[in-house]
Amino acid sequence: MRANRSLEIGTGLFVLLGFAALLFLTTQLPASGVKLGGAKTGYHVSAEFDNVGDLKVGSPVSMSGVTMGEVTSIRFDSTTYKAVVSMRIDKQYNQIPEDSYAAIQTQGLLGGKYIGLSPGGSDTYLKQGSRIDQTQSAIVLESLINKFFANYTSKSAGDSQSAGSASAGKGADTQGKAESKK
Amino acid sequence: MSGTRPSLLSEGVRRLGSTTLFLAGLIIQCVPALARPRLVINQIYNAGARSLVIIMLSGLFVGMVLGLQGYDLLRRFGSEEALGTAAALGLLRELAPVITALLFAGRAGTALTSEIGLMRATDQLTAMEIMAVDPVRYVAAPRFLGGLIAMPLLAAIFSVIGLFGAQMIGVQLMGVDKGVFWSQTQSSVGLHDVSEGLIKSVVFGIACSLIAVHEGYNATPTAEGVGLATTRTVVASSVVTLLLDYVMTAEFL
Image 1 (cartoon, each protein chain N blue to C red):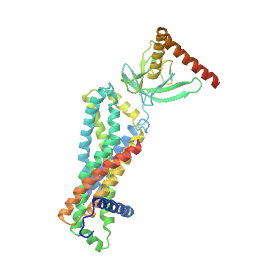
Image 2 (image 1 turned 120 degrees about the vertical axis):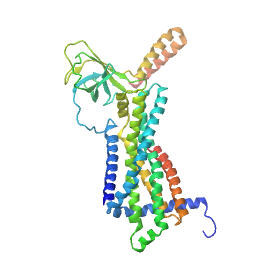
Image 3 (image 1 turned 30 degrees about the vertical axis):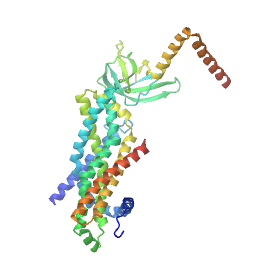
Image 4 (image 1 turned 30 degrees about the horizontal axis):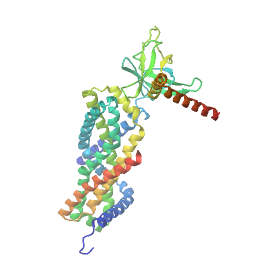
């Protein structure tokens, strides 16, 4: 009977441990999973961005590199055509100036996006339901490259006549196509 | 068969066929075996709880190695922040199911084979048959079910311990930010990654337990035969695990 009891306890512990591990993997690891531990305390603020890049729910919100909260939802506003990001900020950080500036930044070279807050100068602070008005969108690498090439080609157009006319020809071509589509 | 050695191919096909038939018999006997939960619980203890130490220790060191290697590799691309992602995905989808299955074959599979093989060699299985007790139901099925249930749990434990091992190296030793480590991991690991690992470990659990039980059940009833069967269990389980892993990875990606 005694050996039986220790066997049962051993098996019980093993199964418990296994399910605890599974629970951790399914609920805590993926951001899409069900979060345990209830709602975290803090207050919610929102901000509108032109482009959120690959910002995700659960991405950190930080100021001066210190994480203060996380993104709780991202939705699309169909009247302003902007992305509305709601974020939860821990209640201990309750003295963030109202006119603070929110920018979507990147962790490292290939890292994920996060929201970086820069303090403003106002005497009133952000509170539950506040909106951050000054925002800067995510920098999309492709558009940056496009901008660079646009600058580059317009500069080099003057240098060589043939290249300029080629690109102009292309431009006319695409314009013609666009018009024919209409 | 008389006198001539069967060719390797026909022997392989025969073995595959007999294993498949054995699996069919096992599945039929699994439901009545569950009516005796104590037998199954005993086997979960044998296959699972007693493999816990080796699984946890291996998981910790695999995770720590992932932390070191991953950090060194990712640093070359300036993206140390992705260490958590790399470690979590590597562990969940690949390393945890496969290494758990290999360790399981060595730790629990051999024990199963030699136990059942010795029962065969000492005529215990025959005695059961004479007493109208189905040895597949009372000996093979509980062991099969025990291994099947233990494997996904062991793989999950392996993943979690490995992840903390990687975090220990990455965050404490290499100085990756802890918040970034976890937020990156959470943003890039989906539920489907977890379920992929889970499905893999269930399949490996079926394969490894089946091979172990089958080899023991059909062992030549001699001391040498049991030894050979045990060796075959490890070899067959490892090869089948890696082969199935390739097939399933190709399927999932």
